[in-house]
Length: 148
Image (cartoon, rainbow, N blue to C red):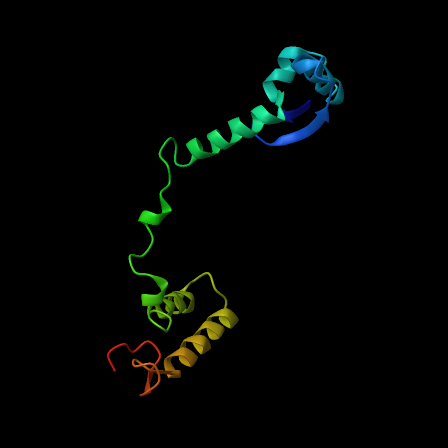
């Protein structure tokens, strides 16, 4: 039977395959020897010994319960309500805001600010071609200009 040595962060540190007759007590003794910790109390403060099967079921349950305490993180509720297919063809305006933030950041050096300024200028001068009717007509507009 496979036994695992688990630290306080629920990470497997070591594994051993022992005869089933040795049981958990035999695995506990084995891992105490590996860690050179003869005192049970001191060993148990740092480590847990369990079967790999118990670890897998316990770890999976704990992982679900750890997310934001006992509240489950429901990422899909924070996602956008439109499908990717409905998203604008171009990058949204927040990219320009991010670039402006980088340009004005006191944490960036002169070279970095110049780099982001060039990127912003490049994006402001870019144009995009799109066809609302599957290729029959083609429209040209500035990148980020959703009105024209």
